Length: 331
Image 1 (cartoon, helix red, strand yellow):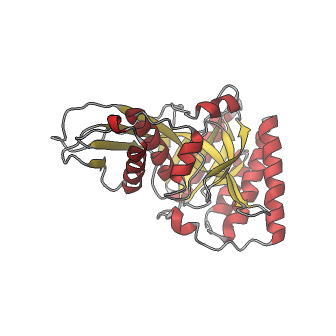
Image 2: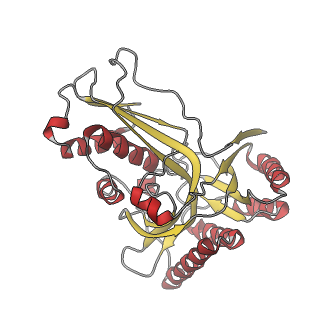
Image 3: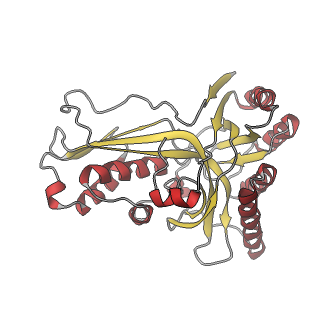
């Protein structure tokens, strides 16, 4: 059994960067953003622009660093395939005061421990971290509203720029509501394999009826009340229902086996990456029986899928609305 354990909120970021010879290390801006384990809820509400999701923040991080020089004298990104982050960096550079721009270009380095193409908000975390890093380096303020406007020009985006559980309109990239925070949970997750392009997924017509949209509105109301009451059992029920309703959009062959594992180990429910390839059993990390439950869930999930990862959720202590104003949520 291959088991990856997230021990706390500060996940270790990989060491990576531009090739040697790219100039002296002179970091002038750093930004971070967390990922998610899919979503607690995702669907369409009975209103215009009704596509929405509710985030499930976990202790996996993306970090961006930006320094005002490069080998070519142009703005560059490392690794080179992070082209969306490069596009965002250029957009922010265009907003910077003329005196803040460097004639020697700039180098953006993006480091992440969030798997790509799995529905874990890896691209969103990269972009939010990039906005914070480049904004700090160039003296361009990056409050959440400005980040939303910039990201809406690039792709559908998760709500990882807010340090709380939030309801977020991912296609139009705007906050719907801050729901709050929850006691610590763990997610024993598996990956069905492959990858999903979020942009392509969001082009798929939604086969939801008016009744389905009403059901999503009711689920959002239930989840909002559950987060406020810190009712993890109800959170798990809503997450499971959302996973089942999403089967029409992106079928997951392991959903029913994972539900069986959840029942066997006394889990809260099953969460999925609605636009990805991941599924996970939710567990109450404050439960006295947590160690036994997480061990049993990991063993059972390994029999289903081989590799298993255990994620810890982020609790965001303090008043979530005040934290949203700060707009950071760094580790």
